Length: 144
Image (cartoon, rainbow, N blue to C red; front, side):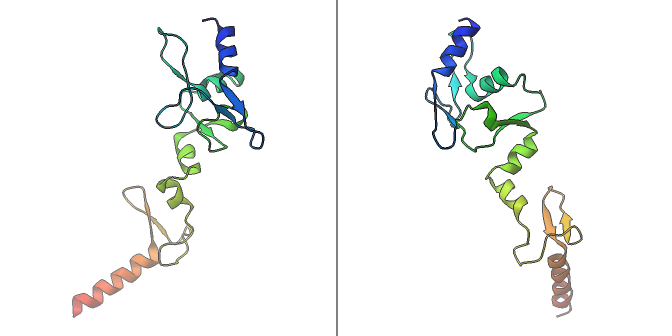
C-alpha cells in the first residue's frame, strides 16, 4: 500500500463530531478503545491516533506519549493530541493517581500545603498534622 493510499484510507475511517470536532475512529478499536489502522498483512496494526499525529505534526519523541486532550480515546484529531511525559498524561487523567494528586486536603480536612505535607517512601503523601496527632495519641495510650 502506498503512502497516498494509506492516508486516503485513514481519512475514510473517521467521522467528525459536529460539536467537539473529535475525529471519531469508525473502524477497528483496541480493547482500551483506541483506533487501530490496518495497513496490510505484512505490517502490524498501527494505533490510529499515533498515525494521525505523525502525519500532521511529525515524529513522536521517544520519551513521550500522546495525551488525548479531549479525553476521547477513539479520537484521531491531531489538534486534540499532545506529546507529553507519561507522568503528565497520568496526572491529567481520571484514574486514582490523578484524583489523589488533585486533592487539596487530607481526609480529616487539613490543607496539603508544602509545610503540612510529608512525602512517603512509596511516593505518596501524608498529612504532617495528622501524623503529629497520631503520635500524641500513641504516647497517651502507651502511658495507660
